Length: 324
Image (cartoon, rainbow, N blue to C red; front, side):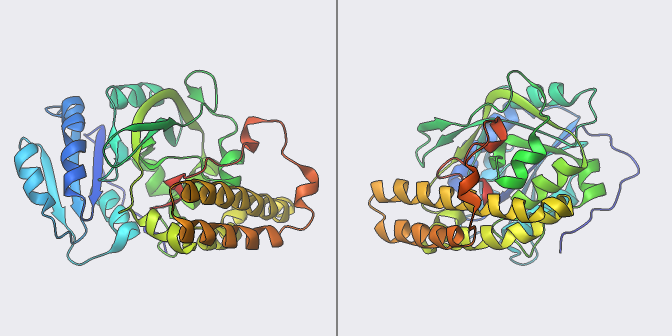
């Protein structure tokens, strides 16, 4: 189950940037300089690299690029992605916690913009727009705006309960929210972030920062890519719905599950098309197979169509944000 951090008596730091890594030292070397450019030398910030038993020596990257301002922590044993995320959160001391996966990046202005957006609000988290990049760092497509201009997103919970709208590098969570509402469920290795963002959005406001300030990397070595090749991402997405639906009123749970299954079908179909275009036919077939199974479980859902509002937009194809 998800781990609950112990409340600290004092919070002298504003920022904790937690960078979990596992065999992505090359990408870490690309991510660290921008984080340091924005927060290096700031006595209100800490940067922690949490290594989950890598074999490619991320510690050497920290020694070379860290300017003695990056703390390196190696897990005592391999914990897996979700266990590493939760350990990183438990190590953090800042008021604002940014979990930056080692293969993703922040763009110039990320930390000042997010801090400004959260300042003076009761929001539990803030999320920004992101851009997908490939293994070489080439820009692919940008995520959409969910509101015009930066501010509290009133429809966040309704959007999250249907489909994961968060790209991992684009969200910052208050430490107090993790303490009060918990961290990642370790029984959901692929959909743990989706469940957590939904849980947080149910518990308090979410600020949307209407700027592209982080980069989410799509590459064949990621955990998500491996799960897509077998369809495991859709299988777990389907099973996670029974847990996520517990966050809504009991009278709406059946409808929530049906919508979630329908969105999973749309997601799997579009992902399969993208994989097929790339020549990954077996992976595409796995997505279509599991998406079809989701559709079989939603009799009657198609009759209603999509409501004409922002929260009803189908998920973006290729979205790794369900992944840890």
